[in-house]
Length: 173
Figure 1 (cartoon, rainbow, N blue to C red):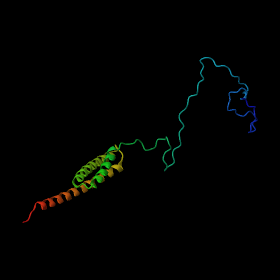
Figure 2 (spheres, one colour):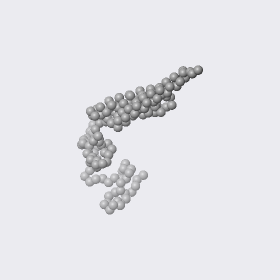
Figure 3 (spheres, rainbow, N blue to C red):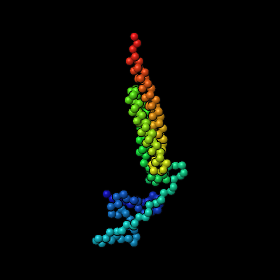
């Protein structure tokens, strides 16, 4: 199917673009150009690409554009800080369980571990070897609070058991 040439709507003359450019006569021939058969083994060379274009810097107060490395540097490990925070939260949750003696002992262990990991993480953060300062502070504070509450709960439960235990063994005639 061939289309007759139509005048250009822009007023510059010439032919309209044919999306099916394979039909003969659909493309105008350029003056001084005659297609010649390619020589065997000849492959046209593509020009080399230069360096990638540089993107403009991001405006202050806005995050960097997608694909542009930010000024934040590499991410530092924060495993100890996260472990400290998680153990502190677990210690608070276990302390709220209605199992008096067992929950006190388990939450005391979680609290001590959270406080130790939080202290070690804070030391590494201050040296610049780790990240997660907020998680480390949260784990350290929760660990100390859980330890204090667990000790108070254990002392209270122990004194109640001692008081009821001595009252049960005392008999009066």
